[in-house]
Image (tube, rainbow, N blue to C red; front, side, top):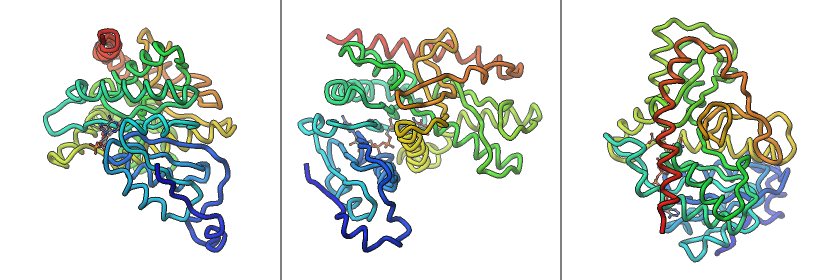
Length: 342
Ligand code: NAD
Ligand code: LMR
């Protein structure tokens, strides 16, 4: 792999530059699928983090140019590129956080589950390598359908004897980002203050925004609840249709994934006030995997915020029951995929 680095001397000369972040910690982050629509802007946003000392970019093609390009940004992290299966193991050595946006994206008319046949194998192969090379890392799964790919990752890690459910995350941050944006617009709230927990999974009706738990507290008419819930659930499709065959959300996803990476790094660095919604192994409901708000600490998930599921409105209670069969089937599909392998 080529080494791309910013010399410390050059950083000193540019101390006043807006983006010349001084290193505050030294975590290593790997992005698998780094040359893709999500991977590239995500790598850029991670390159801006003062908590990162090394950024490992892995893809099956086109990653050398992305790394060379990014390496010219005068931010502290060293950028390294890794191309193809023979360099996968090296891309993972010593890494603290692995982010996986590798795989195919939807086109109009497809569901996320239509991506299963291709992405299940990709995630399985990549997580096997994670298990072998950085079993202690936080693993962020972005590749769809995450309702199934996270259970696949869990089974692979179990087979390798290194599964730590506290460190395996399906990235559902984009649902929260969208919910916050749409609610702030609808209710004329200051965007920065708005926080809407989104639970369940990450596909269609399994995405359940808990509007009654919006902070700062806001009241919604029944029509507003229906309209906002459906828009949040269909927001991915809204982008897929607007892109008209050129893929799905990449920029907003990179923004959301970078937020989740930064939260994970802050947690690893000892910040005791890190809360995010994510899709994890869970005992919150009868389903083995479920997205909800959790507290993240040095060792991964420290606590599940169970109070979010208490005192739901009738609308939310019904939607919660309605999503369970689909989410259960997606989880079982992922688990049986791993066990059916020769
Ligand atoms: P893309 O096609 O632009 O990029 C995918 C990248 O993965 C490509 O660079 C490709 O070379 C790479 N890749 C393919 N096979 C690989 C392998 N075996 N190892 C490493 N890299 C490999 O797609 P995209 O728009 O970046 O989307 C990627 C995935 O993220 C899709 O599955 C999409 O559905 C999903 N996604 C998830 C969310 C979410 O909220 N979790 C949001 C948006 C997109
Ligand atoms: C999204 O929510 O934007 C992603 O899951 C991509 C998709 O297929 O919609």
